Length: 205
Image 1 (cartoon, rainbow, N blue to C red):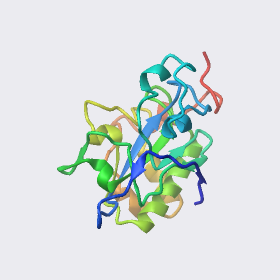
Image 2: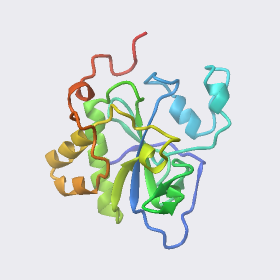
Image 3: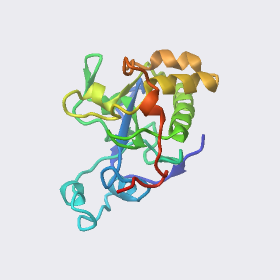
Image 4: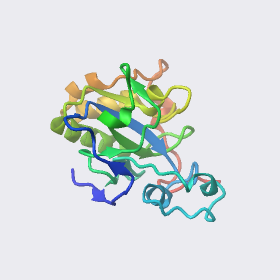
């Protein structure tokens, strides 16, 4: 896939010889619970206006990024090439290794903890995972909450790991499902997690 590129300065080089072995799935929306704006791109490029929204005043100083951002429409945007280190995971640990930024790729989905994700986002995410796993020796795919438990909650309870597995199978990449570590909710990764009754671009109210 060929994502649109917006260059984030919030990155640096990986240590020599360090391979990408992990993919971390995140969720973000700026302003919180609102979709379709430019807040995420502005945050990742250090041009978020602290006067534009009360929440922005609390985060505009942060220097963060992700390798990719997938909008509600399924559009993928690359902010940092996966060969470089993006600043997405923060204090984190995976399989006993600290500093997940050193060896991971971070993918942000436009979303939040209280609403389902779009079918187009699962489709784009599956294609992106297939591409990354073909390029790098990826051993695991997990959530931000799983590498930073107690500190982060994303991609949240409305992200369906089961649907992601099924989407990988649908595009002929079913073997990649074994690399997905979270099992998903025991009450099924369907139901409310599969329904999105609101317009793609915005949450009502």
